[in-house]
Image (cartoon, rainbow, N blue to C red; front, side):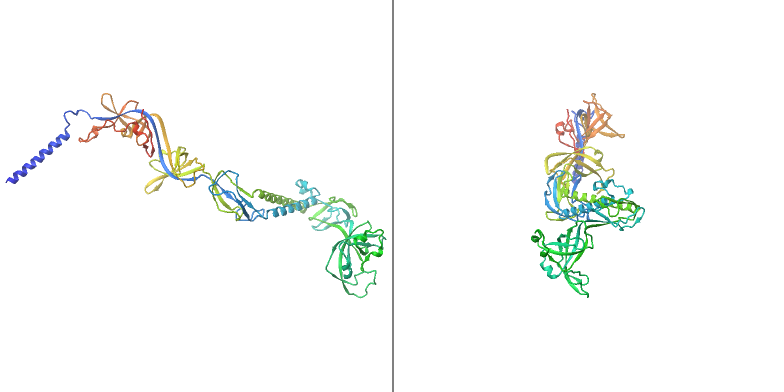
Length: 582
């Protein structure tokens, strides 16, 4: 019974004690006013605000240039150059180069040969067309294919066998005429083996045309054939022995002689041939008995200078300017010819000349391209050929990038993307270059985000005005400026709330009564917001009150935000916010 009484007494004590404690906590002390709440306020003042977004990413060059061998890649170019040798490499990766600076010197061993061959071919074609048209090489550019061609004399001489007649059609390759220069003639002497052994290269030949005149004609040895030639005895004519009546063969040596024509000598004339050494040949008067006369006679073979004039195309002779046996000068017009084939031939030659001129010019230009020059100002990124290497036309040897114009591709989440605008200024820092800030600009903002682990991110491209100390791949940090304002009204974010879709604050009136007002906000970071309308400088906004506290809580200070000195250097929403209170 005693135990039950003690238990009941203990329970009554606990209930009474707990009730008293609760009463002391819920009922304010007599010195507190319980007729109105206590407010924490902030005096509205003017200050500066800046907002932005922090991002990071690697640097990449905006654009660059290639270090490339001249010519088309993968095949021999039109100039015929198949490869080059790297003669000298003047730069290395990492070097800063200026546009036009020589980077690599090349060598094309066969270039000079190609130029000489191309020049000779062009000169031949130009001379051919000039001769065909009867004009000088300088006048080729004014040639009109419709005028036809004028055939000119290739050498000075006498017209022989003139076949061209006006109005007559001639075929391509047909002989129109033959022109001979009879000032020099040629004779083939036939010497026996013994006579050949006595012959010296500087001997002088004397020719006797006794059937026509008595004077000896001097001739020079122009060729001695060291190989004996078998001749029929019936074809060998001799004044020293009767002609053979029975055919047999003898070995003879052919010696080619040339002499000046006094005007009487013609091809086919018989001649006796003798030789003297050059000292005996100078003696005056000449003693015939000292001449070593050859056993076999010969005859005049031909005139030294003789040309056949051929038709260059199927055509019709329109005019003949000379007569048979008439003396003509080199380049003198002989015949004019016309026709479709002639026109086609002229056009074909003109096209060939134009093509060869272009090819020759390309070869000349190659001489100036033996140096590979920098296409832009920049830094050599790589160069993968060394001295002595063989490279092909068009081959890529390396690249150059511009550190003065870099790009950053970064990603911004959907919370901050609205603060990133195209054209916004950017401050870029690089850990590898401490203490330096590079200027940048937002160049492109993606209009559609991409999901990354449940977070929507938007790609942003930032253009960076860099410098030679920057290199591709360096990690950079960028602060995208979303806006700033100076000398504007600022309020703490904790004073702002939304009601009916509008931004509002409470102000404490002079009579101590709170009043709700609608405000228009501007820039905002994680500490303060710009108020564009609804508040004036000097008003007090409520940032908290005892009505918002539990009965056991107390307001420790009448300001719930730090003063202006505490705000300096704090970060804003997604970036740095700076606000100064006046």
